[in-house]
Image (tube, rainbow, N blue to C red):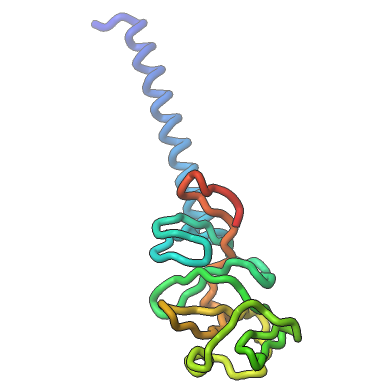
Length: 169
């Protein structure tokens, strides 16, 4: 027969293990709720927009966007991360030098005539309610794309990996 001290030690260890399991279960449930309703964690697969391959970002759902925000959105079967050039209600036009004008103010974004031909936007244009305008591209080609509604993943609010780059975006 085991001494009472051994039973007490075993009971104490069992209680600690159960408590750790309870905490892990609660934290897992919170993580699932957060990732379902409030944020999405993204891993960058390419480079650009100030991010490198394998950076890990957090995007907040259900937020209002401002010009210059870093936006994550679905484009085809991929999630892209780009800067918002224009937001809901902004008037966008192309100047003679190829630069975009947002509400009459010249933007640093410039597009070639070929880029404009590939764009989904005709000019002058007003960004629809709840939408943003971004420049998407591959290599030396670019195009304008309007992101609206269910295409949004969210606004990138945090970079969590690599650790040296941790912080707000």
